Structure formats: C-alpha cells, structure tokens
Image (cartoon, rainbow, N blue to C red):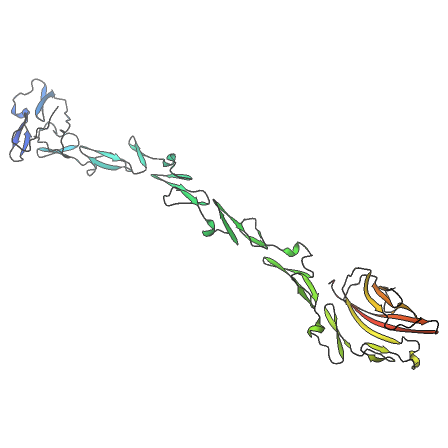
Length: 419
C-alpha cells in the first residue's frame, strides 16, 4: 500500500519524497536517476511514487492515483522518458498529475444519444431520461409496464403518455381519468343532451324522433299516423301539428270545426229586403217576401191564397217558408224536421205528405199523430246541395164536408262537410 506522504503543515516528507521549496510540496525522488544500477541484468528501473520498481524491459506500468480528500490530487512527479508516471485519466502538469476531462477533449466512446459525464480519473456515459443503459447502448424504458396510467398508456421513445377511454379526460396529474361532460364540451346533439358516466345521450323535443345517427332529430309527421287527428285537415309543422277548418268554419279546441254563424256575427252581404239564413259553411240571402202570385204575404214567412180568387181553388190555402241546414254523410234514416199543425179544428182529420221536391225519394214523412209528423232523411246525401220540399198537411172534416190544406215550404241546405 502506498500512503499519502504530502505534509501541508511541515517540511518533513516520508521515505521516497523530498521537500520542494518552490512548490512547497513533497516531491517524489526518482531513484532510477539517483541510485546507480538500481536494477541489474535485463531488468529496467521504473520510478514510482515513494520508490521504484525493477521490471522486464518489455513491461508497462499503470499506477492508480493515491487516495486523497481532494477532487484533483496533486502528486509530485518527475518526468521519465520511459513512461508517463500519471495514472490513466490523468496527465502530467509540471510535477503533478491532473484529471483529464475526456468529455471536453472528445476522448470518450459515448454513443451520440448519450451524455458524457466527466469524473475523477475517468468518465461515464449517461443515457437520457427514459432510457436505461444495457451494455454500451441506451434502451428505451417501457414505462407502461409499471401501470402509471389509469386507463391507457402509450409508450414513446424516452417517455410515455396516458390516454383516457372515450368519454373521459385527463386530470392535472396527466395520469388519472375523470368523466368528461360532453354536453358542456360541444356534444353534437341537435336538441337535448344528457351527460352520463363515460358517455352522453341525445334526446329530442316532443314532436321529433331521434335519427339513426343518434344525434339528429327528425320531425314526426303526426298527420300521416291517423286521419282522425283533425276533423277537417291536419297540417304538419316542425315538432307539432295543427288542425285547420274550411272557409265558413272556426276551430273549436284543437281539432273540431264549428260553423260560423255569419248572420249573427254580421259577416254577410245581405241587403235591404233580404233575410240572412245561416247554413253549414256559409249563409244565404233570401227575399223577405217570397210570396208568389196569387199568394199574398200576411206575416213574416207566411203567404195565403184567398178563396175569393178562382185560381186559389186547387191550391193550398197557406204556405209557410222555413229554412234548415244539415251536414253531409248524415247517418240514415234520420229524423230531421218535425211538422206541427198550428190550427186544429174539431172533427178534422189531418194527414201529411211530401207534395213536391222529392223526385229521388230521398225523404219520407212519418206521421206521429193527428197534428204532427216527422220528416225523415231516407238516404245519405252529400253537399253542397239544396232541396226545396213542400210538406203538405191535408185537413178533412167529413161532418162538414170540408177539406183544406196548408204547405210548409222547407228549404234544406246540405253542407259540404260531415260536420
């Protein structure tokens, strides 16, 4: 063992060293120069710290630096033409050995991907972060083996990254995943978005169906589902539907149509001398005096034929004008109008019949009793159409050998619709 023989506080040196006044250090004595024939025969003298060696002439001596608490030990040396007395990693500087910075002098064999780190007497090749050294090569560390990521780990050269499953997002530590609120992040729902764990759901407003893509909303054509949604006509609209009524009708509630009574609302064009008669879907303006010769008007809607006139002998004594309106496609048989005698004479027998206007036998009379009868619709009729029926009541008094008749002239207007 060689010991550190440098004395910093005195001028005494150990064996093999002498005090150097100039450097104020103990300097190695080169015994190969001071001792004659220090080595005999084929042996060669090699100076060494604090002594010398006799070795074959073919030998090479590599000495290690002496232990020291200093980072760069300064060891006194004497140059020798036979060899460099400094150990590997050091160079002679005057009488001392100083560390060689192999990294600065490019005297290393580190790979291009490695970093050269100088150390005392040597150097090391350090791999970048994320790599481990195997032999002389730097090999990428697969960090994903250590399950750093909550969901998915993606290894990349020298590092790694964490990824989350769809519907999740990374938090600040770049490793954990939390649910992503897609509804707040611009989810492609056309109308309504509902967030759920790891995903989201699209929903549509009332009146829309969710499309096959799960995002878009398509209008539901409610009108195509049923013909009974509206009494007259269904109109589809975005997200809803509405019912409309034909001219002369108004919507009641959301789906039913009701006739507008133009005669009551004043929405008619009847002039002076005319009477407004409301019918389904419109109105009629009729003359206030509809009596035709030889009849004369005696009251509103009533005409009589005076018996003093020869032409009245075979005609009904009176004609009363009445007006009514019925809907199309009415179920049959259907009672539509009741006839009632206004004057009753003792001992008289009354009978009722349709005098005219029923050429196609679409109506008939059903007598109720001696003073009343019912007009019955026998066949379904479709409007718009107008009938003028003369409903006659014939009165016979056999005791007085007397017969007379009166007519109710009934104008029937059939509306264009079944409502």
